[in-house]
Image 1 (cartoon, chains in turn green, yellow, cyan):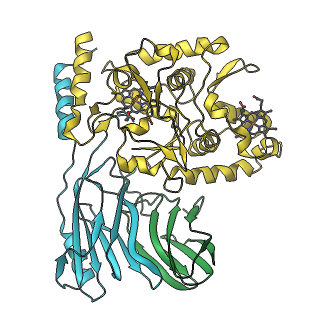
Image 2 (tube, chains in turn red, brown, cyan):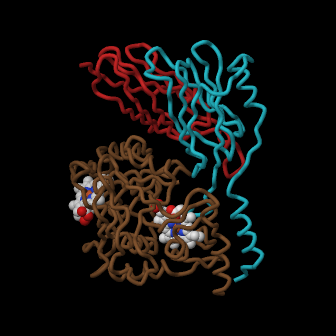
Image 3 (cartoon, rainbow over the protein chains, first blue to last red):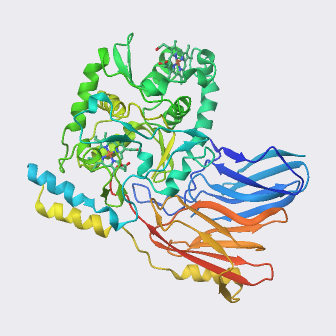
Amino acid sequence: MADGVRPRVKAPRSAEAGEVVTIKTLISHKMESGQRKNKDGSVIPRSIINRFTCEFNGTSVLDVKMEPAISTNPYFEFEATIPEAGDMKFTWYDDDGSVYEDTKTIKVG
Amino acid sequence: MKFKALTAIAALMVAAPALTFADPDDDTLVIEGQEMVTKTDLPAHMEDANMDMIMSGWHFRSDETQALQMDDFDNPGMIFVDQALDNWESVEGSAGKSCASCHEGPESLAGVRATYPKWNEDAGEVRTIAMQVNSCRTENMGAEPYKYDSTQMAAMEALITLQSRGMPVDVAIDGPAAETWEKGQEIYYTRYGQLELSCASCHEENYGNMIRADHLSQGQINGFPTYRLKNAKLNTVHGRFKGCVRDTRAETFSPGSPEFVALELYVASRGNGLSVEGPSVRN
Amino acid sequence: MDFTRRDTLALGAGAVALTVLPFRVNAAGEDAIAEFTGGADVAEGGVNLDAPEIAENGNTVPISVSAEGASAIMVLAMGNPTPGVATFNFGELAGSQFASTRIRLAGTQDVVAIAKLADGSFAKATKNVKVTIGGCGG
């Protein structure tokens, strides 16, 4: 699935120290559940993103265990506290071993 | 014959109160701060149609589905716009060119979506955007055409459509396009298939009613390409036509066929005056 | 053409009967809860679960969960063949214990959210979501 997978992240460019900000993420991925069948009746093997993490300067914001019931093109919205300026790192882990990453720099003040 | 066809449509309809949906709602569609025209007067050529107003399919969807279209980040169709932007810039084919080599940024195509399908003088035919993109790929780039209703084509159409978002649909139906338009109109009103239903049976005479659990819209195409929750991808106009014809249990035309091109021009003209709102989100 | 009156009536009946697809709860959901809670008691309330009453399409149903001070919230679709949906583990820099996502529901069923609260106790919320199927329009 590593082909054509594309993350999108919406995070503010700047925040006040200690501010709580809203983050949205979306990634293009089939999230093949392993429960669908091909026309010939054979099961299409499972291939999903099974984990998503968000960290700010190395400290965890959110760590999600994902199951096949998450829709195609997985979407998350959540909130993060921004204690200081730094980098917010987003990571998606694919069943096939691929890892997709994105980073947003957030200024303070 | 007539009796049977009427029975078929009556049998398919379910009274709206069975679910919480009722008539098309009165919500306002604002996308990223831009207000869309989603209801307006009938274009002059529809004087005889049995309708008061033309309306975007957005009004017929649930609040949750509607909300997905109101924020570009929440709209999953936008991922494909990003993908198309990569394709826009990538060199392909024997001429060593990309779309950007000739057209610079995609914003140079602002207004295109509002006026397509459109008569092309040199080619002597009415062209959809997809036909034009493939003509650029084969003739200007020496590249392989995209499959007519492929994901790549839908994505490229979404990128081009976005440049016209908020502009009123304004396809020409006179002059050299008139013949194609009339052919499209005829297809629209022809009853097809075992169920003997025309596009008009559902989208003109019964919009606002429930068909099984689906709230019937006017079948407008101002929101195409549409990201459908059902298949989680962008859907082209012809892909949707195909599904609708198949539902009447008729043999369907194929995407890119002259019949569907004519039908697209006609259906687009039924939305003249509505805002271009693609890529939209539907169920 | 050989369209018969019986076909028509069958279609009509289908139109009503197919509106919702009820699914039976399966035991795997209860097992997943037991695993998450270690068998501890689960109180009703203390966690919010937002989901539409009627979903236009079971493939993409928006939901959100929140529970103040929770360290984790697990979401289950009790009627899916495999009920697991997601477990949100909130980190030190979580701005709130809130998350929103989009999920697949195989039919009308209960969606359940279980939160592990700050004091180590567990709280639960349940929401029934009716999944409709569009009969037409490809």
